[in-house]
Structures are given as C-alpha cells and as structure tokens.
Length: 373
Image 1 (cartoon, rainbow, N blue to C red):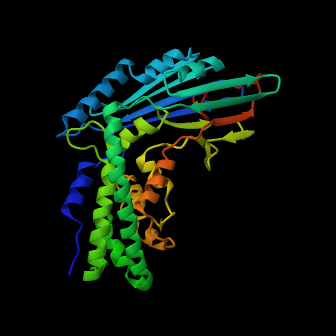
Image 2: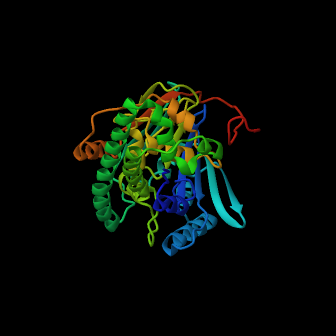
Image 3: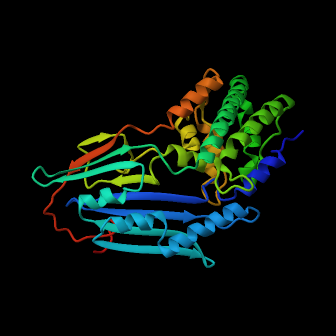
C-alpha cells in the first residue's frame, strides 16, 4: 500500500511556485548613525509575471512602472524627507524589473518624521546633543490601505481560516498522539506528509503508511492545504488573503528593521534580534500563525514545510524535523484559536527606542557598514 499527496495540493504548490512569498515584498531599514543622522533604505521585490491571472499581472506591471518612474509610494516618501544624499538601484531579470532599492541620508530629525507622514504612523525622532542621546517613538494608528470591499471579505476569510487552523491543529494532535504510542512510525508518517519536498534518497528509504495512518495523514494533509491557501492569490484576484490582511491590520507600510549605533538605553514594542537589529512585528494572518508556533503543536509541520520551501533548490530535511522534540497540548476550540490569532493582529500601542550618540562624530559617511566611504 502507498500514500500520495493529493493532486490538488501539488497544483497549489505549482501555482504558487515562488516558495510561498508574496508577489510584492517590501522592506524598510533605518540605520542610525553615531552622529544622529539616519540612512533609510527601502527594498521592493516583485515576483515574475504569472500566466492565467490578469488581475495579478496588471498589479505587478503597475508596480514595476511606478518603481521605474519613481511615482511609487516610496518615491513620494523619499521626496518628502529632504535627504542630504540619495541613491537608487534596480535589478532586472530577462529585461523585467525584479527589485528596486532606494536609500537616503536624512540628517535632520524632521526629515524622518516627514518620511512617514503619508502612513498610519505618528513618528517622532529627537536628538539631544547635550545629553548625547537620540530617541525614536512610533505611535501606530489604524491602517487605511485596504478598501471597504477588502475589509468585508476579510471578515469572512478570518471566520473560515481560523476554523481551518483549528482543524489543522486537531488533526496534528491526533497524529502526534498516535505517534506517542508508535514512535517507530514517525519517519514513514512524516515522510509521507512531506513527500513532495523530500530528496530522492530520503524518499527511497520510506515504508508506506498503514491504513490507519493514511486516514490520519489524509485529514492532516487536507487541513494543511486549506491553511496554506491563505498565501495563494486566488484566480481573478490581485492579492492573496494574507496580503490583504496586512493592508487591513498592519499600520507599517513595510517590514521595518532598525539598526542602532549601539545598544538601546530603553526599548518598547520593538523585538530585538540576535544580530543586534530591532524589528516591528509584522501583522498579518500567516505571521500571526507563526507567532503561535509551539503553543498547541510542536514541531509545527506546516510552518516547517513553508520555511523549507523558502530555501531555493533545497530539499526538506526530514531528519531535522524528526530530531525536534514532539509534543502536543489539549486541542483548542475554534474560539480559542480565533482569539489567539486576533490578539496577534493588533500592533503594540507604542514602539520606542533610545540610544547614545556622539553629535560631533566625523566618521566618513558610508551607505552600508563596512563599505568604502
């Protein structure tokens, strides 16, 4: 007996062959210099055009046109910042724009505040030369980027998707409970679940699942497919449901990262990273699910699957997944799952960081750390 992933899931993976990334991905990095100035860098990555979806194709073409002409929202923001220096770069593949990056040296605090004026963020940046400190404060407001129709559709999406997540967690816990009693069956079960992402070597070593295991895998696989659909742009639409959720819930115009010239003196709202950077949590459906990793199910198969797919040309590491401690908790109700998701769709009331500066510092300016002046 053998078990194969349903053709519908394979179609989903092929239709969204860019490894579960959004068609348009935007990032903003603020690198604060020792003297109090800041280098703002926006990066916009645009996916390859996709056949069969005219609405999405029009959106991608319009995004490329605006980036090329400088009429996109980032062009307007950089224009408002009164920058002391600017640079712009782009990358094309086979003649088609794939990414565009803008950087600006903003010497005055007022320039950074003006940069965000068209967003839902109230930004205050202060530099105190006498005390030798700088502070960035961001108060988020309600995002206005989504249309009323998108907001109405998201209410239905949230209802259905949180129910799908609940079923996924319950199906996962059913499989995990079975594997607690049959630990020797973990490799064939998860090997079957991840079959389309395995190397030929790993696939060749697997035993087929039993009839009982097949029923549990079919249930879990179907739930995974429905949960993953939030990352896919539906036929005839220009945005995926996850992208729409960001337009509605996320007041930040892009994923925001801060790099300070030294350790923060005070920190609120921002998340510190291992490399010393600070980030504002991204607010959307998929990021909310990621934030719940381990609460009810660990390791989380669907999150591991997507993360492995985002590594280009890499097979899923089945042994790495199997090496993770496996545990599950009491199955949550649909209401508990929805409450947990909605809690992670709300921004912090305040994002604030302060740090030491040296206003008289005359270190030659560099666009990037380690770059020649």
